[in-house]
Structure formats: C-alpha cells, structure tokens
Amino acid sequence: DAGITQSPRHKVTETGTPVTLRCHQTENHRYMYWYRQDPGHGLRLIHYSYGVKDTDKGEVSDGYSVSRSKTEDFLLTLESATSSQTSVYFCAIQGGLAGGPNEQFFGPGTRLTVL
Amino acid sequence: SQQGEEDPQALSIQEGENATMNCSYKTSINNLQWYRQNSGRGLVHLILIRSNEREKHSGRLRVTLDTSKKSSSLLITASRAADTASYFCATDDGRDDKIIFGKGTRLHILP
Image (cartoon, rainbow over all chains, first blue to last red; front, side, top):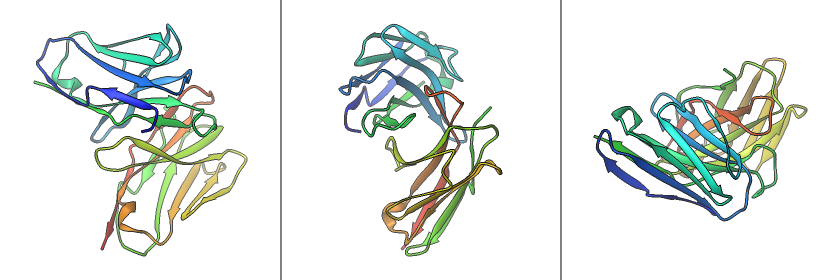
C-alpha cells in the first residue's frame, strides 16, 4: 500500500446523502483508478483519470462522479448514496513503482455501508 | 467484455502441496497479470507476462500463457499458510490505460 492512501477507511451513511471518498498518492503517477469490489463480481472499474482534470468512465459509472484537480488526489463522489452502492472501494495507481506497463498498485480500500 | 475468468472459483489444498489456478480470456491481449488479495486488504501485483512470453517465474510462482488457447495458469509451489488469499488475473483491452479483472480464485491452505 506504500504511496497510496484512502480516506475514510470505513463509513456508514444513510440513503440519499452525499459521500466523497479520497485517494491520495505520493508517487506522482498519471493514471489513477476507482474500483468497487462486491461478492460475485470481482473488481469493477468505476472511473479513472489519465491526468489532472482528465477523467473517463468505467464499467459501472452510473451514480458516481470523480474529480482530479491535483496529480496526487482523486476524489470519488456519490451524489446521493443508495443501498446498492454499499461496497468496498479501492483506489489504484498505474505504473512507476515497478515500472511495467499496466501494473497497478492498490490502496487499502474504503468500506462503505449505505443504510 | 474482455474480462478474464478464473478457474476454479475456490481451492483448498494441504500446506506443502502445489496450487494451480487458471484464467481464460476472450480477445487478444498485450499482457496478462496476476494479483493476490489477502482478506481485508488491497490487491498486490504478483507477476506480469507479455503476449510474446510463454512462461515466467518469480520465486515460488510460475505463470504460463497460451495465447492460442487464450488462457493462463498460475502455479504456486510448496504452498504455505500465508498463501491463503484470493488470486485474480487481469488483462488489458489492447490499450495501456486500463486492465480488466476476473472474479478471482479463493485459495485456502490447510495446515
């Protein structure tokens, strides 16, 4: 998990409330990713970023937005949380730590529960 | 989609035995990766094999890639309790900016 932190690590919220998860990297990497992990589905890409202010949608982007105003920070926002968004969220960065193409390095995860 | 599929979904073996898990995918790739996830933790990159490679080793790990069959295998030799984890394969989609994960194999090493 070196170089990547996520906050908060755990959050319980109520349906309809906004939630923002933060991913912070100290590695100065261009690519950052948000995934969700659910039983039976593995890891699914929500959004990713290929630079400051440059983002794109992933496989399960509905209900989520992202922002990247600085290289080191990638924010994931649930504008109005729903119970279906209860999940474990992982941030990842790509490349550099080991130098290979596509190799991703993951944060410790955020466990989000929407009641 | 390009998502890899691991097989088996779950595997239990005795400590000291070898563990083999497989990954199949659907379309051409540039490379394939294997990751490990311990319970409650993020994924950790284990090994990457490029499409022009057939076999790669890293410590007790051996990965093979058969592009004609669109499949890969991960072999863990002389398993240890600490190898208990979920293992995921991940493939690129022909680009360098995204990878797609399979659903994983849960490996349990019995004492």
